[in-house]
Image 1 (cartoon, rainbow, N blue to C red):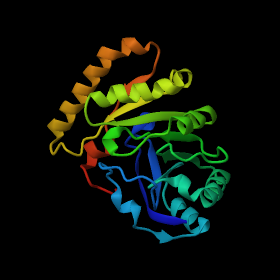
Image 2 (cartoon, helix red, strand yellow; image 1 turned 30 degrees about the vertical axis):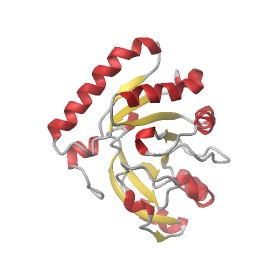
Image 3 (cartoon, rainbow, N blue to C red; image 1 turned 180 degrees about the vertical axis):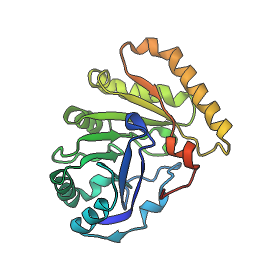
Length: 225
């Protein structure tokens, strides 16, 4: 496997926010988002066997393991072997994906899908996201740079509205342009106020606004905690 880093921290994003996890960050991504905060994973990494990754994971106390990137599904064959080995040893697994690659089987306990809006400079794939939602315990997570991004995200989810109604949809401020904690919180408040104003148009959709908790606790740019 091409592995960028393995470290212990807390889940800082989405509906599992605050859960202690061991993160296995894989190298390489098929996208190049303009605001990506892990660009080092595009190229930094070393080759490890599944056994070597498993040994490193066991050095940490967490029962949840998050496979992130980069884009994990670029390495699906060895990723599947790792997931099987982790679950055999009693770990729970979650994968973070950009929703542009459809794996042949569903092996993780949870899937966090983060489709890319136009603010990323990339293009989301509604057809693939729909298929991922059909076969996994999932969440949808959108990075919001301005309030028009919310409506773009909701229009995107309208392509698979029946599934979207049963999926937590998380909106997360992009945040990289805000140098202060006060500015980041102001982004959160504006985003939440906007969601409150439009959610009546999306009756029974599970719309949530959440921060990057690790950013609030440890500051931007921190990698290994």
